[in-house]
Amino acid sequence: MTEAGLAALDGLADMDTVMRAVETVSAYSTGAIRREIANLRAERATGQSKRDWQRASGPRPARPVSPVL
Image 1: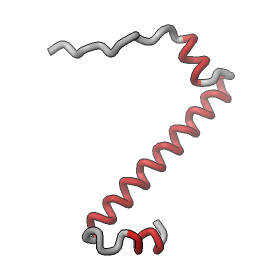
Image 2: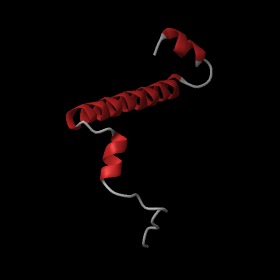
Image 3: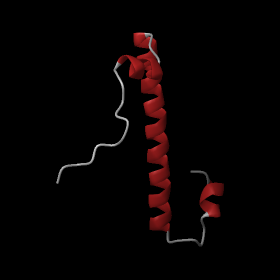
């Protein structure tokens, strides 16, 4: 997070809360980037896009399955 980004959050919350928010956004961004890289590597290795793989794997349920309690 840049100094300008932290300055924008100044006064909204205490520093611990701001840092938790920054860490949360950073972790989300890192995860999204890693997931995209993994998808691209899988596509390159298999020659199938995610959509092609989903089609080859069979149909999805038409509606969500309710959990049994």
